[in-house]
Image (cartoon, rainbow, N blue to C red; front, side):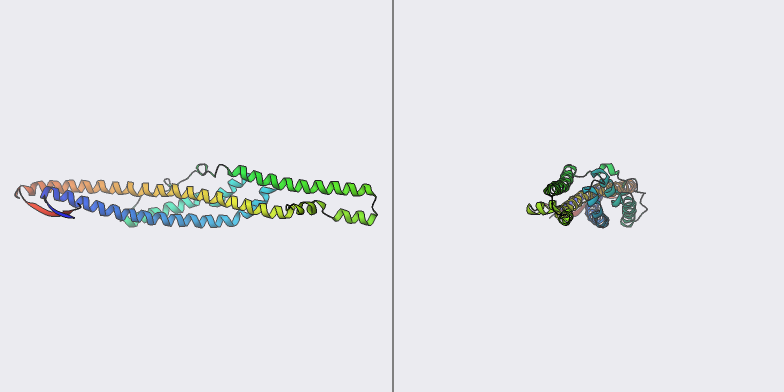
Length: 261
């Protein structure tokens, strides 16, 4: 830091510059805190949504629901509309507390069209592969059972053995040797589908945070600039007062200030 001297006329500009620099640092800190609180709110919604989606995995594997239907359920469980209202109310209250004056309604600023929330492009293909694997394993087990029972029927086994053979799951026995027994496959695929849907949820949550964070920065700085314009009008009036006062002061008056090197 160095010391320098400026005229009375430039002293007001220096003070205003210094004040704005301090205000912007404080504002950036307040925005960061606000963004963090909004992220926590989204995370709570995400945790609640994760408790609901395990039921979708088996319905997806069995073909009861397709991927797009499950995706709509996920978006519904995220409660984006309710989240927008709570976030806008919170940010508005936070702005009012920071600026010390009434903040405008922000619901429109934080309204998000769910169509703008997109899952990873590869998700549908990956989930379809899991569904195809599940169907193939089930079909293979049924085919093996059918062939084995038909063959045993042609052998002419006693009635008791034929009845026992009908209870044996030959398909499961054979597929178990290849480590792809239908029941085991179902559990494994369910876990993989759950992990995939969890990834979709996390991806959507990241997009939500990004859009909300951008909106927070936008509304805070927009309101800050509007308040700054009011301060500028006040400063102009003060400058008018200064010009009248300046006539009574000497032209060579200087004031010592500190500046960064």
